[in-house]
Amino acid sequence: MGINLQKGQRVDLTKGNAGLNKIKVGLGWDPVSQTKSGGFLGGLFSGGGSGGGKNVDCDASVLMLQNDKLVANDDVIYFGKLSSNCGSIRHSGDNLTGDGDGDDEVITIELGAIPAQYDKMVFIVNIYDAAGRNQHFGMIQNAYIRVYDDKTGAELIRYNLTDNYSNLTTLVCGEIYRHGNEWKFAAVGSGTNDVKLGDVARRYQ
Figure 1 (cartoon, rainbow, N blue to C red):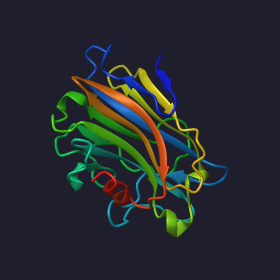
Figure 2: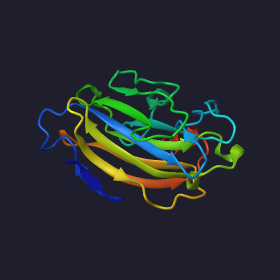
Figure 3: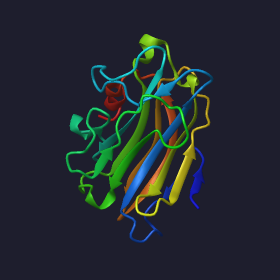
Figure 4: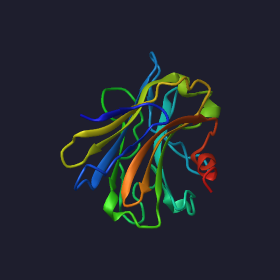
């Protein structure tokens, strides 16, 4: 059975899990009431993406950091760039509606294939064209991030984001980072008013 985390908690991911290499990071959310949700990003540095009508189009992304810094745009994995250059991280693609059970978007990670210079992966969700559509995370509920074994499907870690994120347009859900020769997970759960993924990315440069 996986570990349920609270905001701010950190836990070993690979230590005690001998042989764990390929994992999946699932991110999920549901629309509040009759409002539809979906996706996860909303245009990297300019604003492209998908969505229409009054859907809340959310998008998931991963920032690959070196010494806790984002050093290149190519180190941002999202629906517009579904794989890292090294091939160790793959994105499942944009989900336009958050309706239904289960993960809405999934990131597959081969930990052993991540080049040594990368020490942290930051998992982000933000809303496409949040300002133009006057949308925020108060319109989304049941948001979570979870980590599970790609081979067995066994859930290792789950973090339910239960804070009040009304009027916020970006969520930093969690981090996976190196700790010596092992990997750990941190439940972050912080929100910002950044309206594009590029704005969030600049915080790490």
